[in-house]
Image 1 (spheres, rainbow, N blue to C red):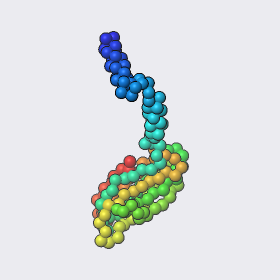
Image 2: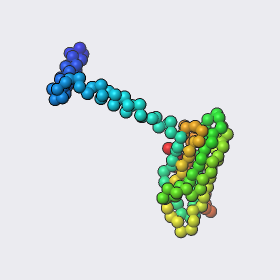
Image 3: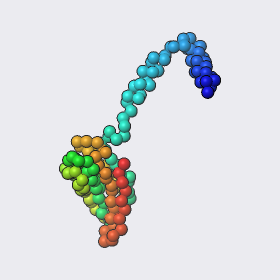
Image 4: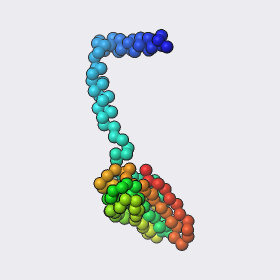
Length: 153
C-alpha cells in the first residue's frame, strides 16, 4: 500500500515537472488554475435552489381538457404562478395562486378546435424554491374517464 502511494506521488510530481518543463516554471499558472477552479465551483447552484418546475410537453387536441395542478408541500403559505404554455412557448392561460399548507389547485384549458400541438406547464414559486411544491400536467379526454398525468421536474 505504501509503495502504491509513493508511485502515485512520483507520478504527480513527474506530471508537474513535465508541465513545468513545457511552460518553463513548475509552479507557473497553478494559482490561476486553482482560482479558476474555485470560481467554477462557486458558480454551481444546486438544482433545488431554483424556483421553477416544468412538465414535459404533451400533445393535445380540442377533445382534451388540459390542467396544470400544483400542491404546496410545506408548512407555510406559498404563492405560485401557474402557466400553461403552447407549442411556441406563449402562455395560453396563467394564474397566480396563494396556496395554504397542504392545499392543491390548478388551472385548466381546452385547446381550440383543430389544434393538435404540445402543451406543457410552468410552475413558479414566487416566494420560495421549487422544493415547496409538487406539480403535474393532467390531460383528460372530454366525455371519458381517460386521463394522463405527468409530473413536473
